[in-house]
Amino acid sequence: MILFNNKKKRGLRTSHIAVCGLMTALAMIFSYVESLIPIPIPVYGIKLGIANIAIIAVLYSIGWREAVIVNVLRIILASFMFGNFNSFLFSIAGGVLSIAVMIILKHTNVFSRVAVSVAGGVAHNIGQIIAAVFIMGSAAIIYYLPVLILSGVITGVVIGIVSGIVIDCIKRGGQTP
Image 1 (tube, rainbow, N blue to C red):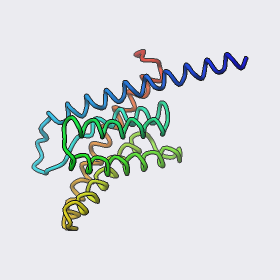
Image 2: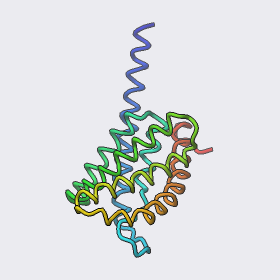
Image 3: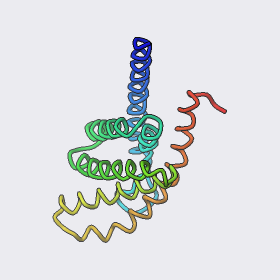
């Protein structure tokens, strides 16, 4: 019986690693696609955050540790492939704050996936503003925060809805209803 349980656990870990690999690849693809999409808003730095679909899906379908790993891998790889050191600093600041907030809110079991996504989007923008204050050496950038919070709420709702669909699909084993 113990041997069977170990094989089952090993198989479960293997499937989690495979899903995390796929979600990291998906997040990378989303990051690339997002870099090609021009946002018709005359405000610099606003992005859709579609890579967060994969992060939220991992958070809800596998666990918080795996979501952190996928998030950090995505940030490092996307910065290396599509950005520069400054984009890495902004992304890691926003990504770490975002995933921390989403983990905490999910853990409470009070908030919906969409609310967790919105909080993650807003936290990401706050993290980027904090990084900008330190990098630029000026607190004046904080005046930009209301616009970023609004964009975080709007994109967070959309990402939350889409990631909910992805999570439901993962839980059904990829089968459509």
